Image 1 (cartoon, rainbow, N blue to C red):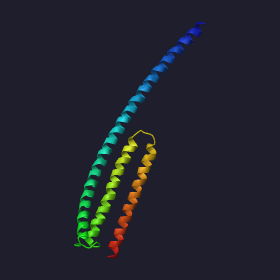
Image 2 (image 1 turned 90 degrees about the vertical axis):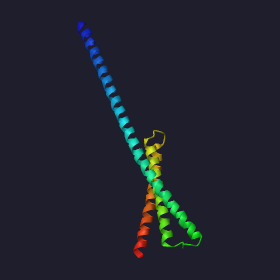
Image 3 (image 1 turned 60 degrees about the vertical axis):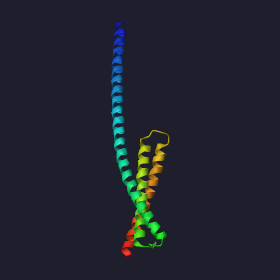
Image 4 (image 1 turned 180 degrees about the vertical axis):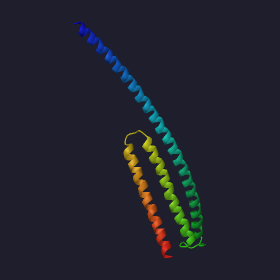
Length: 154
């Protein structure tokens, strides 16, 4: 009977040791999770800043190209410049390319925000935005190929 009491006492001590180890493991896990969350947040902030800078550059290029395009369009409407003139075509190309680049930059920013959010359906939304970016990049490539072909034949 004494052995049963001793064994029971040893088992309780072992269980307390296991519980202590479990608490330490839990604390380590929480600390690791906290570090991972901070790293993830820092990465998101850095990515967000980079995307914001790219968006601003693309927005500025877009606004400049749009302004040039509108000036040329007004000259064409006034009959001072031919619609198929090299100047009109170049302004149109720059405006179109800058528009696509600006849209891609904007969607990349949206995609980043969706990826770091924790709402319902974020994976599907990120996939949808990514598909739209791919479509715009394909259109951009088509424009570049068309422009290259035109230069080749000139």
